[in-house]
Image (cartoon, rainbow, N blue to C red; front, top):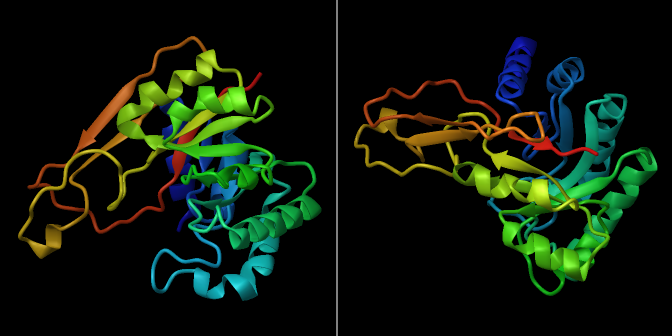
Length: 264
């Protein structure tokens, strides 16, 4: 990928009002980090989409046991001198986060990250909210909540020292997910899935039947939630729709979630 392509995506997001991106669900490229440094964008650099328990037949879980340490070390070594990085994400929607194996893997990952970079907090994007999730959160420095804004108030009452952010939210609900950041000091921001159009899970729109194999893709309508950079500003919203007659581009993009983190 050309450096200009990485920078262009960040420029578009900054112009739309975002001030942070999460590299979902793999480490950010050096070109992205260089661009974020120049543009003043904050980055949550994310390591994995799964650990030892996989989500697909041929995914990274096949290699996790033998390669996680080297891969995390590579991410930290190549990124820790980039001022744009504010947190290290250990993973996204880890299937086994609530069991003993998952917690052991989380602890090993967090320990290695803290060893290699003691200056930045660890986080993860959590989707399972069950009894044992609390012990998983105890391993993290900052708690990422995927699609669970209804938990912000009750979880703060139960765990008042927990720092929370929306690690993933629906673009169609950008208004609703951003509102808590203005009334709940323990919620520091929200990341919208997804900030860049791509052929796949864009979390908005409707699937349209298409009999032309050349035009088939998972979603026919996409949206980008845009959040302005001023604390007291409004939330502009941009809807981008593809009709069933629109020819799909052959170009593909790596999805990034984007956000504005409320810093005090």
